[in-house]
Length: 521
Ligand SMILES: [Zn+2]
Image (cartoon, rainbow, N blue to C red):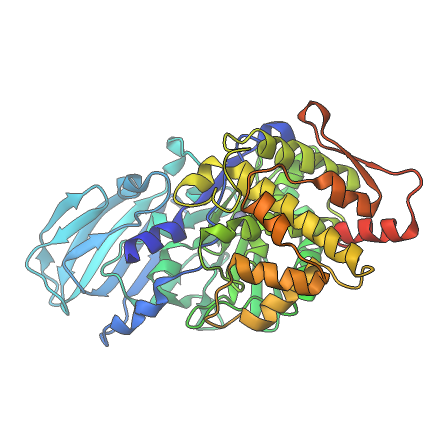
């Protein structure tokens, strides 16, 4: 059980951008919505031994080589690397000169157990060992299925290494892991962890998942921290052109963050025992545009010289994953039958947030709705035979992106429009989100389709039962036309293209609903 949860937590999301949004259709991969269940509840099993301690040494002369020393109290005799990512057995390929030593300095034999683990000879639970090894950051010499952005790379302005690429761990339930960073004086280090000292050289990492699912940047980059209450969003900006556009990125991120906080009524609040106060977002200059999410952290490649429309993909990924801190981690769901809500509603609010931050205009929203969401919805292999609420079970989410993400978003749009129309725009889907946040965030409560239905009915003063049964639990095409008419929009789906055209005689009320659609309320 634990294994499965761990795996689902660390399935990565990656996409590579071709030259336009149409190209992105095929490659914007489904993510796991930043899985909600962490093994934190298992932490009571942790021992009272000394916490594990890692010392990382970055070197200016040879930036591709990171020296690591770790002091570990064994929980079993296995040393292992992350088993996540598309190519987990590649992580140890970059480990050099791994040596294991007992407390008195004697070298201990090590045998390769399998592609991601080693077995320490004659050492047992409770024994303290020291391990020393080098990580050679030559990961870019191979192709990685999700791109290099979430793996490890070296640039003129610094070194990016994922926790997966760096750490050899032992046991399953280690907590309060110490990480010490040694670096050249002129460098800084950015991590998602809390630092223990004002020089930012020593960190305490809550658990092994947060150790492995982290991204570290060391170099001459810029870091900007955006703080709201206890929540900290650290921005890493690397590369001349990115740093030059710093104001643009930071302003946009501030606006997106504030939009979400205002919408939901507070900062992210994960379930009991979980922690969600530090998020690292790194933006590195690159020719290609790409992005990957590791744990709560995001690595983006942006090209400030690219067509603005291309850059939207990077922002879309950031804003979508970022909203999962609320819809997915603060609001948590019973099972995958609500993934249409988790993914679809998240994408709906992603567009609203981007519009609020003035990163996309109405035309771009319409284009994304058609080229990304409608296209994949209508062409989904399960369209007409598989219900969006069932399309995400097991491994189906990967195969039915269109039904879960597209169908979910369109269902959300209809529900929002119906609530607004029925209540003279005094209520909306926003109220439902805020209600769930207030009632469930930070608690053990999980949300299911019945809760969504009940609250949508209450806020909309209507009955969505038939809508739910026909379009979410059923397989009929979601009738966007009917519901967008409330906002004075004529919907056409001729030739499988979704076109939204403003009614030339639209009323003020209809226009208000359209502003609501855009997140302007
Ligand atoms: Zn998602």
